[in-house]
Image (cartoon, rainbow, N blue to C red; front, side, top):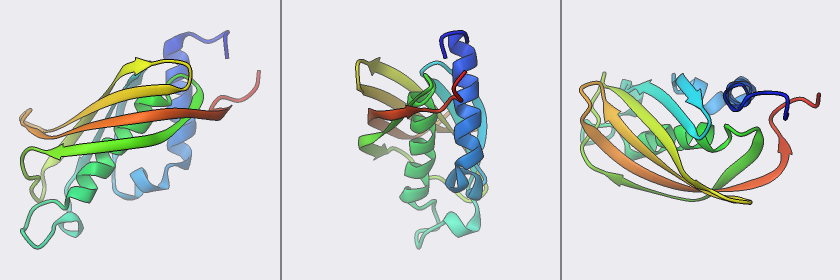
Length: 145
């Protein structure tokens, strides 16, 4: 892993994760960008994602944020999982709205990390704020060299 730049490690880690990420792909998410400690993922709200209020079910917004969190905290090549996550819903998502989740790693130490994700609509309005605590687990996302 050490022969690759940090940017290349992030790209290769995202590629490995995306190939196995049936949940994100199944919801029509798009991996927009990834860099060390950073990821952007987008998703368009479909009719199947709306609730009885005619707005996007919060679970889908959480899932989008969780995916951005996952790609940001796994961008270093070592496997990381969620230990704790919380979300604050700011505004409703609506049918047809494209949501963009940007995950930024705020802190990373031996086995723990904190990543903040802001979910916005195309106009830049904040829809939700998410904070995820990650924990590294044994294993690498990168093939052995």
